[in-house]
Length: 386
Image 1 (cartoon, one colour):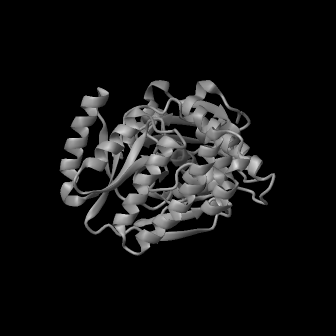
Image 2 (cartoon, helix red, strand yellow; image 1 turned 180 degrees about the horizontal axis):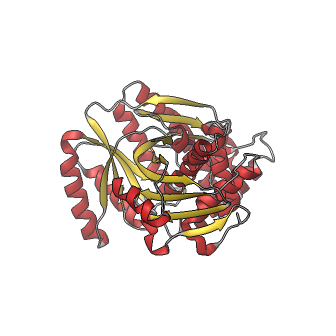
Image 3 (cartoon, one colour; image 1 turned 90 degrees about the vertical axis):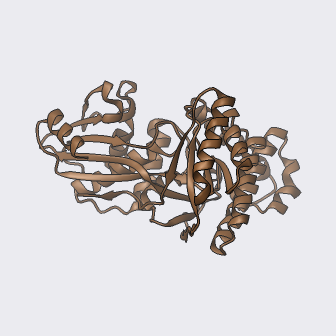
């Protein structure tokens, strides 16, 4: 951190005055349910994005990321808040600033900002939501804005949808803004009702396994899956008075799935409905200390994402299947949008070393390159550090 502070001085010619952090997130269960009005069960993690900042007395914004140092400083004015492909990663903070301005928040001057993150880029651990909520907490602190974390999360979602062009749901930004150490968040994405659920893992740890396959298909397929679910919903709405797939019980869905004319769309909708119910069962199991049941539901979630939603791919399926074979593994599933990225695994502490060694070796043999493994601790949400 001291090196980054010095780097800020070298780049911008003055000392930073503020220091901030926003976590990444991992979703324990409830995948591709958020934009279908269902429940999700994410938690913030202790990997994330940091920023050193100094306010300016003019309208210029100067941004630099140590993760994309080859791009240098990206500069623009407060009246130039438009998407620019050449600005690459900086479109995320730029979009957040634009959404704050459009929502009526006063951003009177520009600022200099240096970002650095230790979330692997493209791993599906929400590096984009992390930088969005980090920008939000910077704006709130620098300009003494009266905005709560949920409103900030909604502006982050708006950034993704309207500025970046990805039709994501609210989960990522909500988890990053509202994270609480030691707790996951059961969030109803239809109503934004949420509750914190303690994650008691006395003899276990959360291990994230990164396929190291960049999620090249994720954005386009994500939008495609969302469109398929919206079409299935419209077909069900010809008879059912519902606003989202997440409102359906399994029995109601099974009784009406014939309304969905395409077998593919039926499977997409089935995943959304069944995964929503799995998420509620998983939170209940965890609250009752039934980790075995929680792990079974995680495994079922991956199988549904593989077979009904078709968003896994060889790398994620390989990691999950290898994990299921290992002694001491409670449950394993893909997490995030899919088509690469990571799996989340709950593993007995005394078996973690064997898990990483065995899964790592078998994955490299099968796929041809290495996976990376991280122990994830559950973290607080975006915050001011100094």
